[in-house]
Image (cartoon, rainbow, N blue to C red):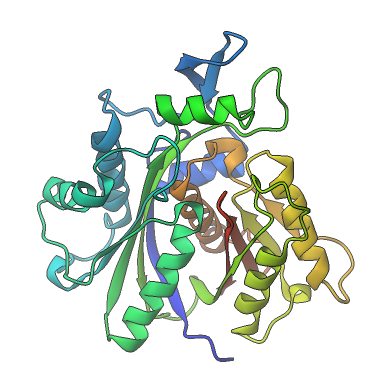
Length: 339
């Protein structure tokens, strides 16, 4: 095994079905959802439904992203000994640069706004990761490098995002990407935030991130090219190879699938291409059915769900495969071990 292991020490999660990791993951396990009407209508003059976080004030734009991130961080660190922020790198995952309707101010203000809201100064190694749904995987790789190569004791990964903005909803509705009464091949938008304290494995009863892999899909959803799932297959192979495992060893999958046929086909193709001996499919979990497709927030939701399954003792096995796909072709896989 060549993998450099790190584990998730604690998690915080803010979703449309819960304002803590504990309540959100319990609701997701029970398959509870809470879609509500937005202030936008589709081409049939029907209200667009979305999974919206029930905040106590009507924050919008950058302020909403900031507030959700702060709540997730507070949830994550609630049971952790006081943190020396000057020594804690923060890896902040947000929407990709070309995402339609991306909130203004993310690049130059969001990190500082979150720090000011908490009342701390983040470590100099803190960075913004603008990779959308694959951002959490990129952050885990970066955290692993900081811990194993830069001797960082702990790293805080934060993800915050929302697809529930007027410009974003308008774009996806115009391109027939949203789930509506007249379109079954679509996703329901969502939003949320997550935070994870990452460090070296401590023993048992934790989620260990053992392999991370990336790929690029040329036949992405807007390309019009025939799909073979080359990018996701490559990401799976790279992640599994880091710990000497194969797809036959995977006990369950936690993914960012959110309703569009393209991504379900991609997941099926990539899994089938790497399967050798096993019969029967491992469990396939897609939390977006409860929380909606929340961009970079969805990757964090998947990681929190895997952690809750391990800590709660209801994981279908020891080896989990998490995978994420961005519209622009980025693909990422993370192999996690529960113990």
